[in-house]
Amino acid sequence: MLRSVALTATAVVAFGASGISFAAAQLHGNITTVGSLNGLVAAPSEGATAAPTAIDPNAGRALNIVAIGSDSRSGANAAIGGADPGQRSDTTMVIHISADRSRVEVVSIPRDSLVNIPACHLDYSPTGKMSKPQTHVMFNSAFSIGASTGDTGLAAACTMSTIQTMTGLTIDDFALLDFEGFQQMVTAIGGVRVCVPKPLVDGVYTNLNLSAGWHNLTGPQALDYVRARHVKGSDGSDLERIERQKTFVGALVRKVTSSAVLSSPVSITQFLDAATKSLTTSTSLADIKNLVGLAWNLRHLTPSQVQFVTVPVGPAPSDPNRVQWTAKATELWSKLRNDQSLADAPATTAPTGTQATAAGTPAGGSTTVAPVATPDPTPSSDFALTTGVQAPAAVCG
Image: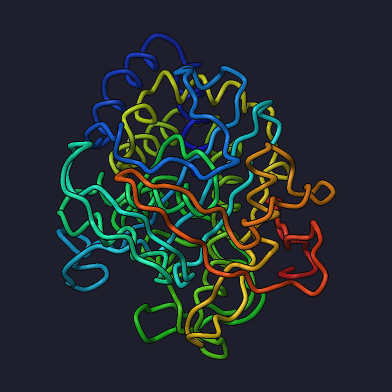
């Protein structure tokens, strides 16, 4: 999604001075930002890369951006998903952009993962009020802890802190999208075409009802497709929903980077207008100049170079409705820390003490200890990778 926004921003600029004026003034003003998160995000665990100092995204270093799908039910979102107090993160994806800009890896973190959440900031003062660290709790609780303050930025900061202390990655920026924003973005480009291998019906929390075959999903229908969790014939887990989300994002990348959108000034501006109005981001990511610079370095990227993977998990012995990261997750995070392609040979063995996930010291001085990993019978570099390439004709015709 972020690459698509960046690429279309570049296309707008390519139309000349009027495009530059539009991007700099209207689009930048659309994006909602939060206060500075400096000093509020826990430090990466041992083995992580040093915090970046370059502001220019084209400086030749790897970037890690966390994309969060919020299920906030306030305002217009209440009419879509039903009124419900509080905010949670239904979807979380870590987007790793390689230093040489030759590939993008998108890692989905199951919301039902049992993780350790460090002490999180509950205001914007680095020495202010902190939450208590929590162990062996659901991953999406991190967003809820910060959101209990009523501030989206603090919700994102707690999510980022949890990812950094659990993985050792340095998270550079975040982008958050809610129900209404998602629908508007999809509608702006005339829907997204996806392959549905078998019928999908869910009448519990969504109105999803799709026959097998190709479908052009519009705003509300697209939201049901990525949200549905109680599809008939499925196990009702978050893992099956994640697979549909990866399929959809891959199709979105294909649509936005297609000639149907890039060759149309109207389509580009409509998509950008909807996207920038819908996103809440960190300040640096909201800078249109940064997005354009990043897009320029990604302009040759193809859907086959955008890879999707879910954090390897296994059943949690303590709760059949929860999952925990396996030893393969350690290898995955190690590869990303070292900016190594997930398709390459296995990374070096993690140091003693990091067999499950990296542990670190969060801001505020508390130390978290990672849960014990579920061992894999045959650890390998096969992370069940998928790409943004369109489904073969044999699947949907």
